Image (tube, rainbow, N blue to C red; front, side, top):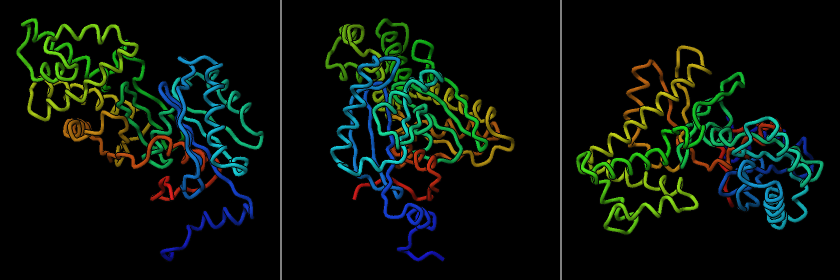
Length: 341
């Protein structure tokens, strides 16, 4: 039986193998808004972290990518000093790298900015979101932020996805979808096509106006109309919590879509009987997972699926740290977390 203060055996063997040298891993969460990097030890202790601008290669030029990653590495190196050279693995989970060519180009870009001694892996950001909850084990992650995607990985290492094709193609189960439906319902009520809804007053308050049509410029003239609309999902949750039927229907409709997407992916990746399938929920929409949970549970039960809902205790960048450690053949204990001393 392991004593309370005793290190797990895999860490003891690891440090014996490494001798006096230090080794760290760098996890990166790269997206369309910001890019976060965390350097941690094999026990999860954060020794350096930094955040820079966007790094989605589909929306940022190569020159901008190089500039942002150079700045990220400079900031981290300044905190680490000479120890920066002891990073063994860099694992970047990034949006916009689904295509093998794009992913390969990104790996090459990072390798050119880092010492040759560092191993580099670039993958889709959905993987690190999954690992932030499962700690490297198989399962499904449902991401519900401004956008949405359902991603899964099975015990054979096979992965697949449902959705995540962008807001112009639907993308239900997202903040944008819920906010967009709220606007549609509010304007239909304004025109007299539907009954009044609490959503109208909440939207007016959100935009600090008393005339619904006056919000149109704020949406259509915004540099980020998708984000402006997605922000209204909080008002839908608020209205639903207060019993507004229109808001409740919007929430239930999106919950049903999420349940269908997860069920579809379970059938693609896992074998029957479907027992104890881990489902990780990440993204701002699921700060109120309770508003979706009953609908999800009912759907899964009716389809003979037994799931375990997981709300991660780490940010996705923690999942990148987990992935980097796994790449270096370090076992991850069930209570692993990244932490600052």
